[in-house]
Length: 145
Length: 145
DNA sequence: CCATAGTGTAACAAATAGTGTTACGGTCTA
DNA sequence: TAGACCGTAACACTATTTGTTACACTATGG
Ligand code: FES
Ligand code: FES
Image (cartoon, rainbow over all chains, first blue to last red; front, side, top):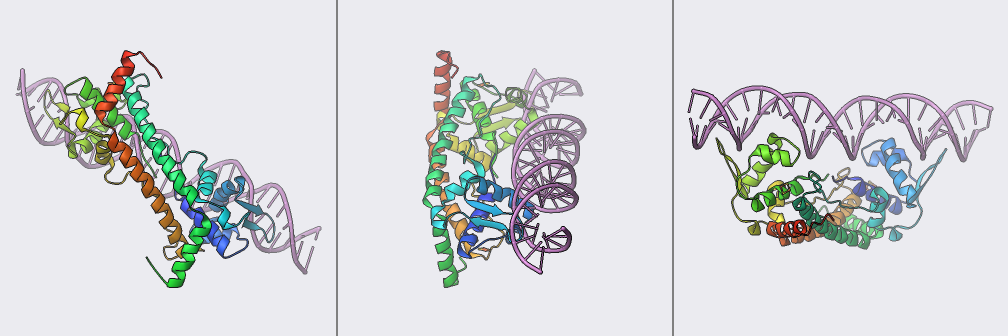
């Protein structure tokens, strides 16, 4: 039921763009993600729809941020990529009328909702600027771990 | 990257066995799960390995609980099915040496660890006996929601 | 006004994971 | 010794994600 490395990859891209400045083409982003431009456009399109980036066609075009890194949280990126639901509880649906199944599903649902709230809180707390700062600090220190 | 309805399904089966007594064959469990006996054996095998159920071959054989429902938590079932990790953070691995990617991964990792702890706490809190009681209460009340 | 460097998108291929199925071997008991 | 079980390998089916190809559209610069 779960998902993907899109969140981590897009955060990487956005922070890269925020730190190293200007516009990037799908081609260049694709290289940095070891993938190809179509996949990049597909994914970036979600971010554009959510207002995090914008694209321009034609010569000299490409992708750029619509606001500074400090105004983008991990939660923003997550929402752009996946919508409201972060985690969804894997429930069973074999005997919809069986009270045992329903009781089990209800308990699981509640547990996953708690976890989702935790995750949402954590995601909201972290801005991309913060990630950029950590990266720059560790790069300056020459750290590898 | 996530998975499956196995947790919900196995909870259903175990509570069923706990409430309605005795031994069940893979065949009967398969019918109640709208699946087939091989899938059941495959999944129940994980629970057996973890000591939650035991199986007996030969005529009159089948599956039975090794302990009462009140001594089985949702977390036990989860661990039996999936091992230590409940959620794992979907990180990126495109440029392992890039400090930005590492910073992003580190933050995501931490967020998912928090969520996993929440989920673990919730799972540990719920015993199968509790689910059984809720089910019996709602069945008696003739409730459907 | 056309060549070039871009995005947008549909259609399809490949990889992955979960699930279902068949087949056959082992084990226990009547 | 036959029948009712589990154990397991091998394979097919399905859904999702990711990668690829192809082509249409757009803006810029000469
Ligand atoms: S490759 Fe550009 S920030 Fe990692
Ligand atoms: S079918 Fe037996 S408890 Fe739901």
